[in-house]
Amino acid sequence: MPKDSTTGSVGDKIVGYEITLVTTMAISVLFALSLNFITGFCGQISLGHAAFMGVGAYTSASLMQISIPLVLTLPLAGLLASFLGLLVGLASLRVRHDFLAITTMGVVFLFVGIVRQQEFLGGEIGIFGIKASPMGRTGFMFFCLGLAAVFAGFSLMVKRSWMGFVFDSIADNEDITQILGIDVARYKLIAFVIGTFAAGVAGGLYAQHFRFVGPDSFGFVESISVLAMVIVGGIGSVWGVIFAAAVLSVLPLLIQFVDDYKILVYSGLLFFMMRFSPDGLAGIANRTIAKFRKQS
Image (cartoon, rainbow, N blue to C red; front, side, top):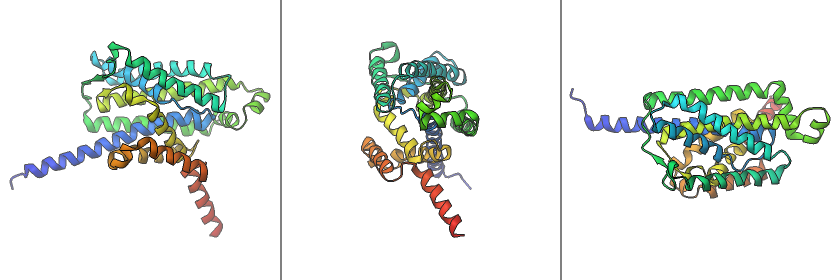
């Protein structure tokens, strides 16, 4: 039977679209988990997390432009992002809560403003024409899924370790933790460095996936979007954040309204969750499970 070229072409497009969705979800999960490490584990509110992803994306994109393979650019992308995270962490040690949020929010505006003025980074246009990954679309998808799974496993391990207990203590009450003799500043910096390293790696994957990076890709809207993923999933919950990031990352691709009014939709989700379920979907799931256990 002769092959139906039209059907084959449509089938290839459908498969390609699904691969794009899964890859986008994997990168978003890694990005959301990176913020969860800072905000969820250690209680440090960040409204400028997209800047760290942007540093990783621009670093990786610039290196790939001179034919350096993606896998070699990712460590440097993560290191430069974590270096910025260390600087922000050091500057934020004396501020808390609302003041910390404002400080980190300033970072993302500063990043976008600086990038726009740098011609070697493409200025307003950005960097485009990045070569496709030699892994192929399917191979790159599994690569992204693998990195997201590795960091998810690492997050679970830390959460259940002594360091996780220290992070929980800092998030609950920094003053009491300090009185107990724990070096709060040190652990806050550790959280910033690890979280921003993962964000930088996510940025490198973003650059390869979309083969373009620009200033508007890492602005305040993206910082609010990833914060919404963490809060909707449940602050500090690894599984909840994974689920929320996977769903919210593909909504703009599936529903035009969400893409057109992204900041409105995500801000509305933030308000709704903080008002009715501060512990997010993970809290709702835990309460539902506990209810069924009591009934049984």
